[in-house]
Structure formats: C-alpha cells, structure tokens
Image (cartoon, rainbow, N blue to C red; front, side, top):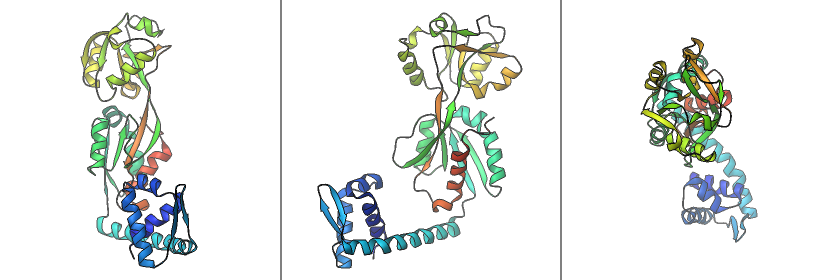
Length: 300
C-alpha cells in the first residue's frame, strides 16, 4: 500500500476538498485524483463520494481514514529517526539582509548558542531576494528578510519592525522634529542598498503626495558605513536602520531627526522551507521556532 497515497487521502478528508489539497501540496488535481482512485482500487472499496461541493467520505473511507492517521504518524516518526541518524545536522546556515546580519544577529546568535550549545552557526549578509533564493535551493537553512515571502514553499513569521530613522551629524543645525515637506529643503545622502529598498521609499513618498525626485539628494551610497561616514563629515542627512547607529547616538556623534508625518519602518520576517529535513524535531525547526517565539527580543 502506498504510504503517500494514504497521507494525501487523509489530507483530502481533513480539507473536504481535492482542489485545496492540490493547491497546498504542489501536485496537480488530476494526479491527486488518480492517486486516490488507485488507492480505492488497491483496497477494493470506494472511499470518497465526489460532487461539485467537494468530497464526502464513505463508511469504508472512514475505516481507512482511522488507520491512515496511525500509519502516517508512524511513517513520520520513522522518517524523522532515519533522518537524524543519517544526517545529524549540526551546522545551521543563516542568511539575512545586511543591516540585520551585521548589527542585530550577533546578539541574537549569542543567545541561540546558549540555548543550543551543540549547534554551530554561520551567518551571511545578502539581499532578501538572494537569501530566499538560497533558502529555496537549500543552500541555507533560515533567512531573515525585509519583505513577506510569497512562495508557498516557505514557512515564515513576522518578528517585529525594523526601525528606520533620519540621522544627522550631532552639530547639524536643524530642529529635532520636522515635517516631510520641511525635509525636502535639506540635503540628503541616500542609502540605496538592500537594507532600505529604494522602491519601498518611493511608495512611502507617494502616500504623502511626493516623488523621490522631490528629495534634495546630493549623492547615493550603497552601504551603511559609507552613509555613516558622510554624516560624520556633515555632508547631509540620511535614512538609516536604527540598529546600525546606536553606538553613534550613544557617543553623541549622530542625532535622530523626527519626521512627524512620515514613517519608513518595515517588517522583519524569518523564513525556512516548509518541508525541510528531519521533521519537527530537526535542529533547523528548533532554532526557527526559537526565533519565532522570542521575536526581536535580544536584538543589539
């Protein structure tokens, strides 16, 4: 008897729909229907009654469903144990967008290492798009990204907000609080990087009836350290992730200028493949669940 057929049969009964299970499981509806028909032929009884409203389980189908739950559970447990024995994952590879990996992740990983002392962690800064590509190709295990993953292969959770602030040299002459229309009178160094996406800022400006061209951009830089150097030399103000300038704020090298009617904060997401190796007890899932349960707690 085909165990996969029993797994899909159980899912169809739970969902009361072949089409829903087809969409969620990345298998065509016709292939799924044929799989269940072969199961009915093998068992020798009709298991489902099909209609335009979905499917109903027959009395024989209820018997098969009862045992399918037991068989599926035992099959999953066997696969988990075999996987743990054969692969014994001890290295967890984490990708994330640059500002998070460079400024926040180290503190989080310190706590995670305390929680999972037998695991080793590697982290790499990449764009969110590259991080998800690596994840989908199983080149990494967990990714932190600054937009919601859309592909159905990913499981993800929002961890909170990435705070983005307008930063100036501490001696820069400007009020502590300004409006967005007052901002366009000032010189700006624009950070055009994977940490703060240009298209994101363009959409935010559009919401307050402004264009990107309305900003008084002196020049663009492609990394946070170049932006910070520009601010230190009094070359203009810049939008930066708050986590990247906490040291400069403490030492009173930089200051934050509040914009009363404009906000650039965006969500932080953690993601992994839905069906990764070794099931729910795998180190990957344990670490992922730790991130989800603790959110941004412990971020530097």
